Each structure stands twice: as C-alpha cells, then as structure tokens.
Length: 224
Image 1 (cartoon, one colour):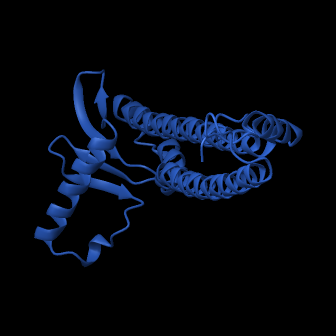
Image 2: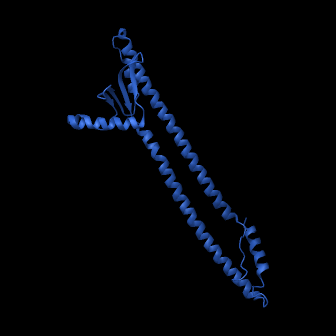
Image 3: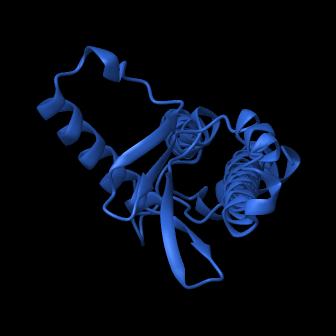
C-alpha cells in the first residue's frame, strides 16, 4: 500500500537473535581452536615418547657393555598406546604394537602387503624416526601412527561444525518466521490506519502515513 514505512529499528528480539548467532559462532570457533591445541599437544607427546624409545635403543646398541639390557626401552614401549612398527633399514617389520589386525592369521604375501600399506600410511602421518649408532650407522626405523584419542579428536571439529550449522539453520528459520509474522502485522496495522483516515485526494496516499509510521517506530522502540 502507498506510503508503507520501511527501515524500522531492530527490536529487542532481533538484537537477541543477532547476539545468539554471534555467541554461537564465537563458541564454535573457540572450541575448534581449543580442540586443535589439545590435538597438537597429544601429537607432540607421541613424538616425544617415540623419540625416547629410539634414543634408548640407540644407547643399548652403542654400549655393548650393558649386555643388551633393554629394560628401559621396554618400560618406554609399555607406555605407548598408539600404533608403532619397528623395521630394519629395508622396512621389514621386526616388532609392532597396537595394530588392529591379527597378523598371525595372514598368509606371508598378504602380510607383507598389509605392513607395506600400513607403514606408508604411518609415514604420511608422521616422519619415521631412525635408530642410528653415532648418528651415522642406521640400524632401524620407527614408524608410528596416531592414537585412537587423536583420531576421535580429528573428527570432533566436523561434528562441532555440523551442530553449529543445524543451530544456525534453525535460527534462520525462526528469524524468517518472525519476519513474516511481523510484516503481516504491519500490513494489517497500516490498513487499519488507512481505513480510519482514508486517502489524501491530492496525493492518493494514506493520510495516516506520517502518524502511522511514527507510531510503528515508537512501538518498535518500546519493545527494546
């Protein structure tokens, strides 16, 4: 209808929705940042544990006087809760731990392929750590993957983003419904004013344009 007002100030409901969306976004981004920080710390811990295991084996290899005492190395490996494979320089597995597959049930051919694929996958995740005597003679390599906890943490951001997307979608639907209801209310109110005051014969506009607009603006402000 002619003379209908536009650009009414945002009421308290609109401001609350904006605040809610902004808060949800900040919360999700903060949670993503915190999750990444925890993941990085756990990854560093795993690197440190593998490095300690490698250094202990190097010490045993470089000091034959110890009589091959690998007690400390075994104590370190007991604390490892992530997949690990110890290979020779040709990447032939010599020891492994926390491997989900029971390799005893595999035939020699499939077993070699399984370890080859697994080692390649581990090396894509983490650079293998070498075991060397005097930092020159390489004896072994330690290949390691990620713990179950880290794998779960890596999936957590996807879940957080999905929840945030659902939340924002619901908020958008609610805002659309509220806007549609508000627009319908304003049209009905505008028609009511025009029915009461009629149209200006010169302009053809509702005589109540200015007073109605002022009333609607004051009403919106009163909702704040």
